[in-house]
Image (cartoon, rainbow, N blue to C red):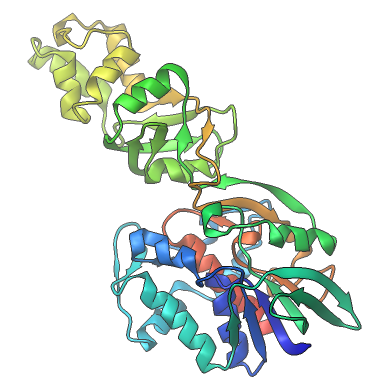
Amino acid sequence: MKTVDALILGAGAAGLFCGARAAARGRSVLVLDHARKPAEKVRISGGGRCNFTNMETEPKAFISANPHFAKSALARYTPWDFCDLMAAHGLTWHEKTLGQLFCDQRSGAVIQMLLDELSHARGELALEVEIGEIVFANGRFIVQSTFGPVSAAHLIVATGGLSIPKMGATGLAYQIARQFGHDIVPTRPALVPLTFTGAAHDAFSALSGVSVQVEARAQAGPSFVENMLFTHRGLSGPAVLQISSYWREGERISVDLAPGRDVRTALSEARDSAARQTLESFLSGELPARLAPHICAEVDLPATIRLAELSKVNIEILAQTLKAWRLTPAGTEGWRTAEVTAGGVDTNALSSRTMESRKRPGLFFIGECVDVTGWLGGYNFQWAWASAAAAAEAI
């Protein structure tokens, strides 16, 4: 039986980083994963560029049943700390938008950095390993696996959530949590496209490929000013992915198609100054041309109607539609395309400082499997680094 100070399940962002930092503190570390390659989510992130953190990281950008839980770890390991690590390995980055940092050398370089950090600290990594029975006896965790039995003083669960099952996502973390008496906040796909049925589905499918900057909001949560993309199934794009984390089945969403613009005044003034202009022509100056006829249909006005023919009621309805277009999604595209998992291991039974279980000392949960979900744009990676660092300091 192999004996280690720390056995880490999961060789993703959180698992590799935790292993490297714990090993650097002189602990014997073994990281196990059932995948053929490590950190596949890192590899595909940011279109292969790895959006590894966000400079605007703060607690409000994270969703949890306990909104205060993430504060301690995030405060003690910041985006600047990870940037320092990148720089020490000769990696560079650029800011794209909204504080999002991307690696100039692509995602493979970030993965290699994590692997180098682990190996240089004499931590071990074994891939294509299946995990079997886990028991706690005589103050140690005994884990059966195809690697062989492992005895560990500390067990760190970093196996992620349920998003993107084709990459091997499983519910192992939740299974282990329940085994040791932890509750699970109900999980759901997050950062995921929204789908529609009926007439909305047909209309959006016809608009597939059209992108427009909007301010989108679910019934709960903040609004986001980013692009929205029409797809064959419904709506996607950064603004929609963001609000999907707050959306619940049956609820409506609101979309401002002209954020920061007073379309009511613009319509009234255009009716006086360009009376012969058609409504479609006017809307094409405010929106993508392909979207204009759809908005005309939404308010039951012919696209060819002259602005001079618009009544005050027409203008009011148009303005309300453009500034607060209310839509009811049928659902989401589900785990297949969800970037992360919302919900997870209930934080009430975890230490916010160390990520250690209050029910079974020596057991830790880090990364995506915990009920902490970040916004789109590098926030979830920063949670991986911060929660991993917190656990590593306690091992």
